[in-house]
Length: 338
Image 1 (cartoon, rainbow, N blue to C red):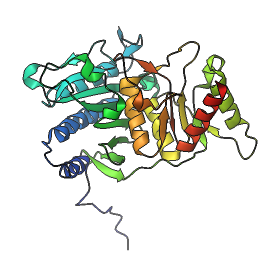
Image 2: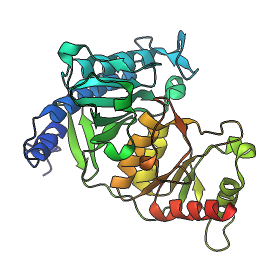
Image 3: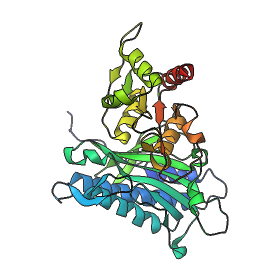
Image 4: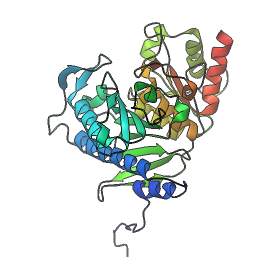
């Protein structure tokens, strides 16, 4: 007779345990990166809790400000940004922070400084907050490159090839963190019963080809010829079934679905935004890093996203990422359109 009880895993692989086990594989590791990732997890847990009770705590609505991007700042945005900054500063592992919400780099107090730089979007997809659509946080970590001198903005302006670790948190039907610290990509689900992220998706791989394209078709009149032609081929293929269209408008949700199901996520340059819309340092680079580590491709249409040398902390970029064959199809069309 079934007891109806769920088996309790007394030896589950938590994210902290996973990071510590990876740390053991690196000779001379100091544990600073593990400490830094733990501070990010603390911020993610707090944001997850705030998102879940936002309506009750009156965290919906506008805070009465606009951020450096000219976007209206929601109350949850402000809270998430403060949580990230406070947790990262108090980890004693960072020296410089770059946030979507702050116009300039944030220099950590000298007595709290460490060797890492963190670029982050504390709450991506915030325009969806009030209607309960999935939102998320995005981050990537670099090492300081200026040696013993004081940290400067140049330490943050590194190409994505120098990323030490990157990941994102998705606040959806459950809270999940997807992370790579240089090797494979792994997914961890927050178990609210124990307050820990538990490994549920080991060694995530994106399939070579999917059946879904994700782009804001409302802007189709502003696309270039190559983007228009690619979408036309997906909607009206010469052979086989057309691709399905899925677009949430929250980068974390759209990219996560693309990784899980395959396909392509596109945010091209347009005549209205000729340099693209998404930010290179804390949106494009972390996601490109994750997608490449999972076996996919990520490009700005001309070169891999991770090869782009940033010139400003809020620099924008077009981005096309997802299944390798789908992205390559688009790159071929762009090449032939020149």
